[in-house]
Length: 162
Image (cartoon, rainbow, N blue to C red; front, side, top):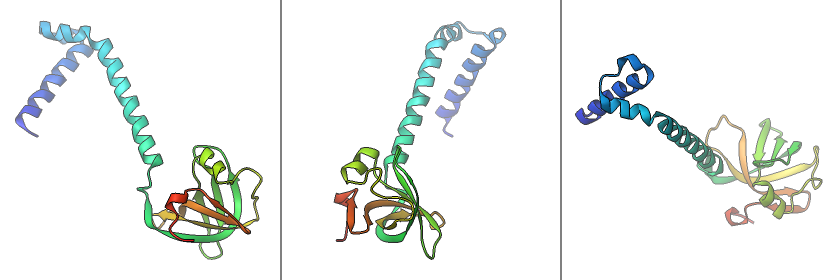
């Protein structure tokens, strides 16, 4: 830690103690800091809330968790969940157990034509998409679904094969 950072940390700790324990207040400038405590708490709370929302959105909406190469996952639909933030399918494969297949956001999935009622548990499905980079995680972000003869292009710009 640099000398300046150490000094600032020490100053912050002294001011924090003074705010939290009035009997330890020694300096008038600390009294000024105490007056801004309520505004400071609101700013800190707002900053924490903003950071947590932004981090969650970035983690959720990115593709960084998925491999760049696309695979085809073939199986049978066990469960369909059409709610947000992303509709999902549980797909049972012949050799690799049950996979979680994530679709686009509800509106995007609907635009592809994949709406409630077009598929049901027991239907055969081929999902084209990007699997998780974690080889232990059975999770795929689908760019296209094929059920029977019908294709649902969820992310048409990301499809790398016909």
